[in-house]
Structures are given as C-alpha cells and as structure tokens.
Length: 285
Ligand code: PPS
Image (cartoon, rainbow, N blue to C red):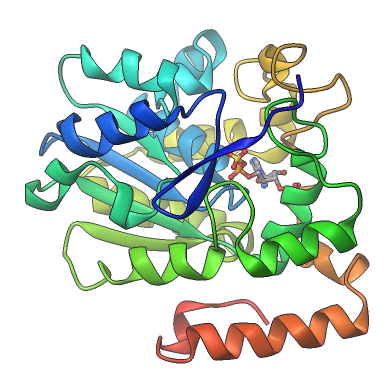
C-alpha cells in the first residue's frame, strides 16, 4: 500500500489521510474558536512530545487521560480526515495539532484569538528523524537511502513541503501575543522551565507535584512505553512493525549521518533561506 502524495498549492501531502478535497475543506470551512489551543509543527519536530506535555498540563499531571485515550484523539491533526471529524463536532476548548503551513491553515484562524504554540527543531535532526520514520510508513513514497531523502528534503519534496518555507511562514506570526515559539532543543535542555513557560502561556498553574508528574509522564521512556502515545496502535495499517515514533529522542543525531559535504550544503542553504530572521530564534549549534 505504499502510497504517493497529493499536491495542494505546490506542497505534497500524504494522500491517504489528506485527500485534496479535504485539504480545501479544512482551509475554507473549519472554524477555529478563540478558546482552542493550536499545536503547530513541521513533522518530526517533537509534535507528540508537545501534545503529551500539553495534555498532562491540562489534566494537572494526572496520567489517566494520556493512558486511556490515543494521542491523536486527545489533540487531533486537523488536516487528517479522521482528526477533522473528531474536531468538528467537539464542544468546548480543543487541542488541535497541525503540520499545515500557515498559508493553508483554516482561514478562520486569522480572525481568532486561539493560542498557538509553534515548536521548531534543528532541521538537520528533523531530516534524520523523518528519514527513519517515512521509510517505515505505508502511506507515502519511501526513501531508499538517506542520500535520497536528503535530496528530497532540501528541495522541499517531502510530506508537508519545505522546512524552510514552513518555518518562515509560521515565524511571521511571532510578534502576536497569542503565539509562543518553542524549540525541541530548549525542551531537552531544560524541560522544567519549558513546561513552566507553556503553563504561563496557557494560564495554567501547577502545584510542584503536579509539575513533577507532567515531567515524568511526558519523558521519552514513559512515552515510549505508553501505547496510547507511541503510535503502536497505528502499526499494520499505517506503519511496518519496525516503525518507531520514539526512536532516539536526542539532539544532534544528524552528526552521526550527514557527510561533510551534506553538512556544508545544508549550512549554505540554511544561511540563504533563513538570513532575514534573527538567528537567536534558532538555538541549535
Ligand atoms: S510526527 O510524526 O511528525 O508527529 O513526529 P514528531 O512527534 O513531531 O517527532 C518525533 C520525534 O520526536 C521525538 N520525541 C521525543 N523526544 C524527547 N522526549 C520525548 N518525550 C519525545 N517524544 C517524541 C521522537 O523520538 C522523534 O525524534 P527522533 O530523532 O526520530 O528520535
């Protein structure tokens, strides 16, 4: 069932969950409400870690919810057919996840006060994580080698398009008060402070033991063992048995895979594409 992508507005999407008509429907008709919380990422940036963290903050560290409801039902992907159907009839505040680039996000959002968290990660690590992930997926064209995936990635010929365009697009929101930028790297370096930052942004207060429980239950090891959060429920239909969402969970794994030439090409491209943004937005080395 290895699938192809559909192209929407010049960007490839996995055709199985994001058919063309659906993407149009999401963009034109999905209503974002002021009380929604939007978790926005380019794929492989730590999306599920952010989702788990936000869910645990919401339940004040109580793990019952994250242990009993699949992660994609707690904070559905709006661009996925199944996620959209869960979201559209849901009453009250919603957590909404999305990998959509800003220009294809539901138009209603531009008039809403919904809080948005945009999580970024060193695109070199995003690339390596994506290579291992997509090569076990059954719903996109699988890369045959890292070399091939590198070529696709730098051209933006990968699901959800160019990392550079995605990041440039969402970063244009950065002066809005309802927009919080986080990085996977800061989450790793100082998880506690990052969770506190998220709590402050969401207007949530946690007791010290509640915060400790958020940290424990969103840790790599605990998430890896939680079948509601580790994508094991998707094996068979969407992924091969060896497919892993929680692969290594580290910073700088790209150094184990890039050749010197690839590292140089990437550096040059990064400088060209991101030169107009303040470099302190990108906290990796
Ligand atoms: S997806 O498929 O786009 O939604 O994937 P996404 O969740 O964005 O990214 C997957 C990578 O995030 C890592 N991850 C974590 N790292 C640290 N701690 C926790 N709790 C955690 N949860 C997920 C996951 O391991 C993937 O990175 P790699 O580098 O492949 O290990």
